[in-house]
Length: 211
Image 1 (cartoon, one colour):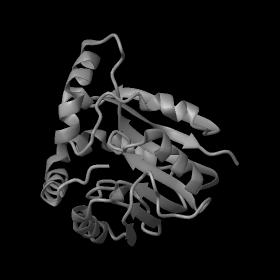
Image 2 (tube, helix red, strand yellow):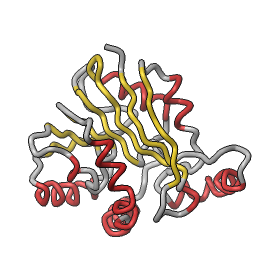
Image 3 (cartoon, one colour):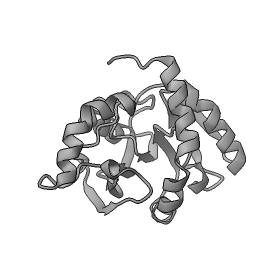
């Protein structure tokens, strides 16, 4: 995997901290409904600057796997603002720094688009979840194959990956979720607002590991 330059990591952290307010406001109701089911020991992969921290109860045992070190200060500031104790670990979604069967909940929002190995990441999530544990996700995905938007996603994807820290706008994430080994998968597709059209097709849902 090519190492992201530190200047870009710093810029990307700043951009996430200052550029997502409209999207977060638009998606708030969906997130509140999704996060209502989160419980126990929580591991969030790619928490970025912490837009999800305000949705967790104050007594949540929260662990974040965040490979960009410039996100960490934003995470700590947001955790202090909302009154949440957090533990930040370095690492990647493909190699989660956690023991087998050790967490009740895994959370991912707008992360699976950027991992190098999507199937490997989902298998790691299954590995660290306790039996019966649940994976809560909100991700932008590929548009339907026959649409003009999908053609645009496919065309712009190489450039988008460079500009968006590895983000693939045309991933059929739901297909991998369906085949990777979760016992139960519930999700819905929707069109997000307050984002560029290329990342407006999104899915939100919960995948459950076999008990």
